Length: 288
Image (cartoon, rainbow, N blue to C red; front, side, top):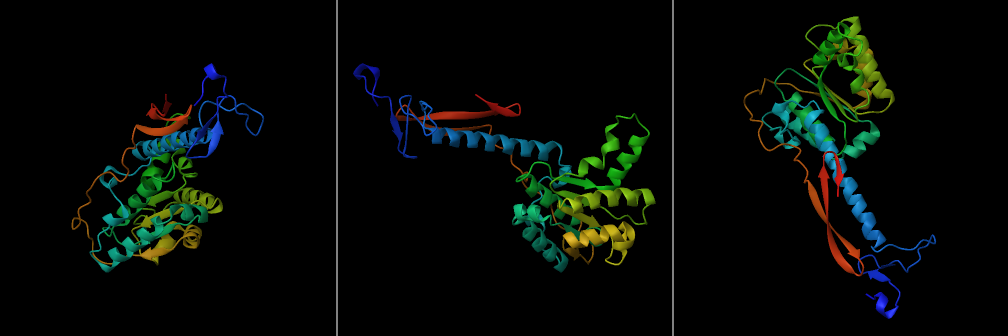
């Protein structure tokens, strides 16, 4: 490093990026360079944005993903291979979450059909937990609860948020709808709302995962042929069989999504020497 006392140019070189910088160094666009290595500054900026994005994904998972408290620890390996169906389900969930970006780009879904107690909810929750680590906005929802909220909103004020219960699900990057088929055929209104949601996501190529307590033969009747046809095209259908496994396997462990660090340290080559900076995340944004 040089200083003003010997009238030498103030130019330094970053040993990692092989870049010369300094107030006396003119860049490619004709601007004077800064006191810090520009490539180090770009890496710092990318680290800040990555830390902020991870916190935003975590906050969504914690407060808005809809994953029930019981399943907050669910991951693909939580599905214990206690039966042939459980082994198939575990393999399907591992395969689906193996490359979630590819699933998103392809708009790939998954249809889980079978009697209660075979791990369908666990599987959907595990997928949404994993998707929240990659994307901000995946949602798990129980379809009868969504319809109940929608109908209750009709009796409230015009700005009652429950009126948007279905609308809020349309653009989720991944949507898991549980209990999509009831024990009896749905009303025309219920069919219309479900078709509108599934059709929109089908046209926009957004991944939709569903679970139903039904047989393969009952499923199209309960959800409607048009819904079943679209779901079958966008994702594989896994039919589960056997007796209920509820109570035979313990769903336990740490949260599937650990809270990100509130700060990170980065190195910046500044004025000819390595200096350490701390990146802090507070109140939803990067703080100095």
